[in-house]
Image (cartoon, rainbow, N blue to C red; front, side, top):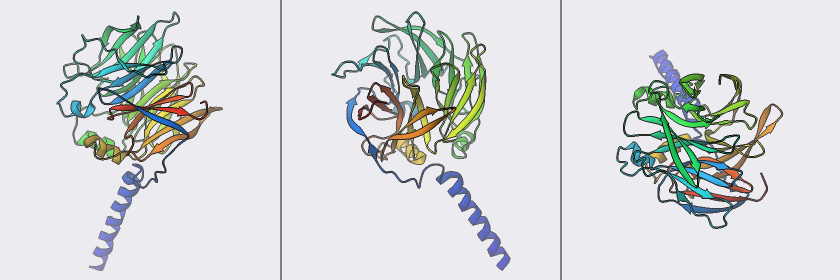
Length: 358
């Protein structure tokens, strides 16, 4: 009897340790949130909720913002389409303008990427989670005469099954993260998340077809390219790290260079003019899951700045809050000394003035 009690106690202790070290600790449950930011913050409201991704045309000071009511879309009640907003950061009065073409009625944008050709043409790539088949496509636009002109829809229902973010590297070529291996909701996908299984991947589209170029990622999320185009950087959300790959510009293949642990749920990645990486993060992932289900549950917001130092990056925390003022930060993008922060579910963005030039 005594041996049975000891055995059961050891099993329970093992399970408790597994839950603590395998789930609760990585999810940031016990992380102390000490709010801080060195600057001033204002809020800019939108008519469409969920400004999840932001990218900035640094030459012209124009911010492109992807917004969609993701709670409504996830529940199957999305009657309204999402929007791409344009924000002129050179204007002292911030006024977001809707730019998605009216012809795209089934439009629910997610990750976005801007590519500028050597001739100065602007192309915006947008992940669209449609309600019709194929369910996931990349919409390609040209931005000209202050308008987004739709050029084509690109899909692959075998490889691009759960796209999250993308980065364009040419007029018709891009890398796109597939954040889950299992594309349908259910036990397998739930276990993939909670067990932090590193089975998500990155696809490359060369203008003709898709192929996998990086695997073994725990929730492949944000993605970007280094200013010299030699590296692809991927955010692994449940892996709580940033993965840096060497890129072959000829065939698009990737080789993992190294993994940078950051101990937080990294989301979208943007690059400033100095080559610094700016990342919107979820420091307490289980709180973010609760927030996704119900807006009364707050989820802390965090912004990291990764500064190149030799062959690696130095990590600096720029902003942290407890979620009461702004929940679920997913992107941080910088123009001069202005920092824009977006969220997966909020109906606004934060416009922050940095007290120091980035």
